[in-house]
Amino acid sequence: MIRNLFGIICIATIVVVFAFFNNRTSVPAESPKAKVEVSGPIFGTQYGITVVGDYPGGSVKLEQDAMEILNRINSEISTFNKNSELYRFNDFQSTDKFPISEDTALMIAESMRIGRLLNGVMDITVGPLVDLWGFGHIKKEEGFVPSDEEIAEAKKIVGLDKIHLEFNYNGSFLRKDHPLMRVDLATIGEGFAADQLAKMLNNRGISNYLVHVAGAMRAKGLNANGIPWKIAIEEPEDTIGKPHALIDIHNLAVSTAGSYRNYFEKNGKRFSHAINPGTGKPIDHDTVSVTVIGDTATFTDALDTGLLVMGADKALVFANENNLAIYCLVKTKDGFKARYSRAFKNYLVPIK
Ligand code: ADP
Ligand code: MG
Image 1 (cartoon, helix red, strand yellow):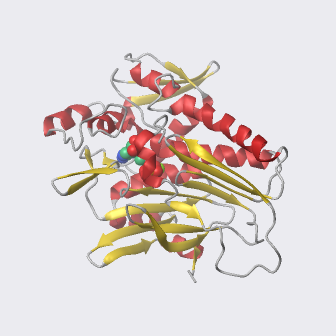
Image 2: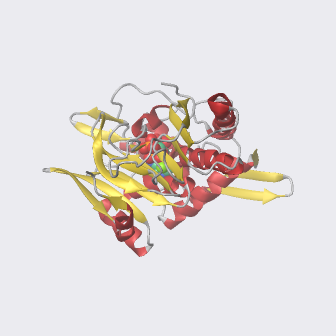
């Protein structure tokens, strides 16, 4: 496992939502079309691209084109690579403005917008808490649980109102109110990366593809069997499991935040990497994953962690009020139960 961008974080959603490549819902009338496929490690997790039909230059060129984009994003927002732009901003112990790339500025702007929409349960300044609980760049001993004082101390330098984005003729800049604040874009980075890959494919005139970066996906057109892409939402177990639901994400984005693969246990209690900025602690409710469908993966990935932190009850109220398509898996004594918003129903297809 490579710990360069999101490190241990991203093992959580390695293909939590994965393509249901072998379509079970209908038998293709003709033989499947040729595909160009690439996949590999990035951001401490995996990416994959399937293009149906030709890609100019074949899989070698596709991999090159993809890696150029993924390496660029990694160099911008990795919280594990000391040379990344975001790492340098986090280590910049000053309240002066710091120049940032257009990508980073876009991710921060979208994160701040969604964070405010979600009343701060999604907060990219959560970095000091992520580090304190041992999910960030600072190594902690196995099962380390911080004291209430340490949590209160870290919370003082967390808050969306304490960072400021500035755009002017010279570029984009970020400023923090406290020199020790740390920004963490792990929750949105995979979605942004999936969107950038999709944009690259669109620009090259590719009209049938599926892209995933960890649990964030974009799909366009038809699969090799000539039917719209379908995605399986996985059974939430510690190992990659069987599909719990099948969704049709024709020309859309989907992403999942889960609390069930990146966690540690202490005295029989699970501590997940999704942190409630209000309490300063990992979530401890029974909602184990939230899947969001939307137009872009940047948008869905920005939302999923916040909705997971809220828990299914509040997340579903929020989703129904805002016409969002979300699917929550909740752990009950009788196994996992799915609960979804009204808008999500349109995308569910029966598993045969
Ligand atoms: P994954 O796809 O691995 O489940 P997510 O998209 O859910 O990842 O992002 C989880 C990561 O986001 C955490 O590991 C942490 O770095 C960061 N994070 C944790 N809690 C929050 C929060 N409340 N708001 C924003 N980012 C968070
Ligand atoms: Mg996310």
